[in-house]
Amino acid sequence: MSDTYEIRPVARIKTDFGEKFGIPRQSGLVPSLRGRIVFEPEFRNPDAVRELDGFSHIWLIFGFSEVRKNTPEGEKDWMPMVKPPRLGGKRKVGVFASRSPYRPNSLGLSVVRLISVSIDEEEGPVLEVGGADLLDGTPIYDIKPYLPYGDSIADASSGYSVSKDKFVSVEIPDDIAQLIPADKLETLKDVLALDPRGAYEKQPDYVYGMNFAGFDIRFRIEDDTAKVFEAVRTADSPKHIK
Image 1 (cartoon, one colour):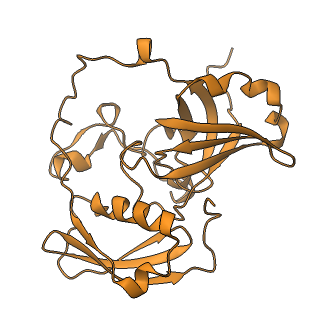
Image 2 (tube, rainbow, N blue to C red; image 1 turned 30 degrees about the vertical axis):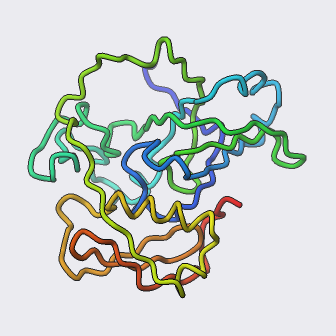
């Protein structure tokens, strides 16, 4: 009997992130982020989500789809040692002691807030979630309810990941702010405040670009302040959440 088997997506999530850069490093860090989970045709049975709306949060088991897509054929798509951003890119730890996307099976796990469960005439069951840290179009392989009595461990140890995140200030000129829908503007500020730069990519005067909510956001970080100087609507923007 084989120890391997194929898994297939049961759904895909629609978010405001058209590329990996800028996505919060963990779910829940930006609660105002929204996502729509739309099931694949064969799983659009309303019975499959019956009573799910009684839970406040759900677990998403998803695939780091961009990792395998961007790995040249013949090269390893995972590494035994990685440099977690939490350690400033200065120290390596084992991949199984990290949440790096470069894993043997490229699977991720996130807990998100379940805002609503609705039935769409064409798409079937649709889940609206908050705080998702996923790229637009990410495949979802399974969904499970979050159970506070079993999933929350009050005295759990955080290992090396104990330091607090350093937030930066955000400046967006009025003429640029007016281009972005009001509900997306506040979320964009929260995302930028997390300082999306990699731990070892913090170059002074460097121009960073982030695809968010259908806009190409250009910014610099100077004196611990993210300063947005351009926002251009992208032709190939993600199907951002309305």
